[in-house]
Length: 146
Image (cartoon, rainbow, N blue to C red; front, side, top):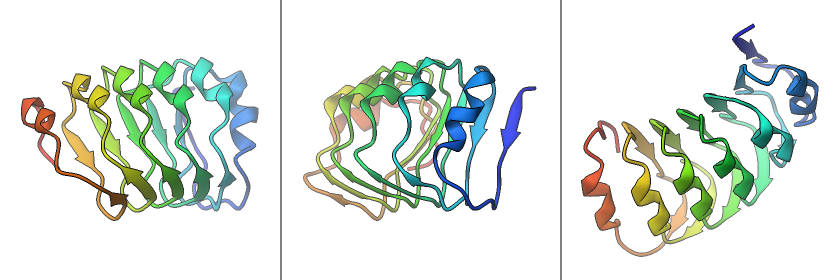
């Protein structure tokens, strides 16, 4: 199995615990009415893709997501994440897509994100960020969508 899709199911984030027995598949939990937070168990998996688009997840974006260095795609759009973007996401050096739009994120973007040199898609609209657009974004040579 290489992918697991759970689209349009009513459930909660505990579905991720069930999937721990499949450590190398992509996680697509979009449009599932999931609530709570992202479990730490995901950080121990060899994942390339996580999509949690349009759910009801809340709290801080977990720092442990920065440990999934195999990720190339991280979609957290349209949830209720709040607080600042954790600098640990800057460790995701293989990341090509990072979408954090439509949450309640605050503060400045951490300078640690400067290391995301492989980004082609970076979306952060509809949040409560402060400050200016960081200079490091101009160094993302592969960026196609901002």
